Image (cartoon, rainbow, N blue to C red; front, side, top):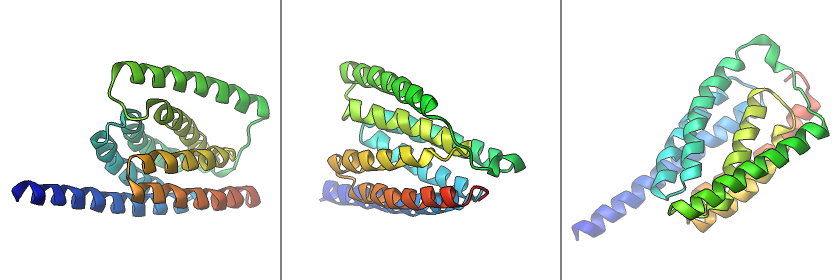
Length: 194
């Protein structure tokens, strides 16, 4: 009886945390889409909760990524407080091709290492999402338009990853993130000085 109660309590806590992270994640994306500095605080809250949730699921790349997101939330908040960063910038195709090749090599290296030496769940998929999400976050901090294209793909891949781990609320968050990323891309494209 006690074990059943403890298990239900654990599921409730995880679900409750997942809901709080969901709300913080949506508020973060809306803030970032509107180029509002306060959005970074909600990104930090979202990431802080996911540090715990991903560690519980043995998604080690996601755990490290979420911890880095907490740190990057502070960097983003600081950087977006500077006047000159509000101009949306673009990078050329050569930049993105080099980034895609570099991120893919790094993701494969991390994924295969985790697959061989840990009990990591879905190491290759998790590594690709993690590496590209970190890169996209840096582009977001620097106010580079193409970050949204990366986020569209990352969010769809994350729906798949978290559905496989039965974190359906989180998978739903990434589906909503996909829709908000479409809006963010449109907002940044139509208003270069957001």
